[in-house]
Image (cartoon, rainbow, N blue to C red):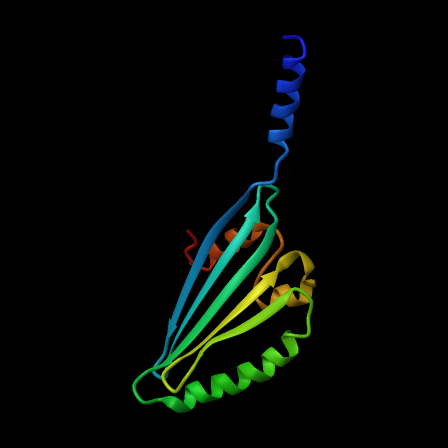
Length: 142
């Protein structure tokens, strides 16, 4: 019995120091006369209030027959992504590339990213500051 009590204490303390991960998703929709843009940020953060990874999905659909705006978005996105793909902690996947839609995913390892690159994606390493900023901008995260 005397050997079991210290073992229970050690197991209890080890369980308290574990690193738990949580997820929240923030969604933003922007609609104009020419295009419908949807952005989803899937945030993974830990119990130390550190954002560890983010998956950003951006999708674009033209309103009506406005293909020119979608074409311009694709072109600028490709140039921009060629610069981003060379940076540490950033992976990019084009999910859909058609006349009717364009969808792209950014897989971000926040711990490896530089501060300048985090600002590009409107992210922060601290989850509390990030979610407070989302609330201030009326972006819902659940």
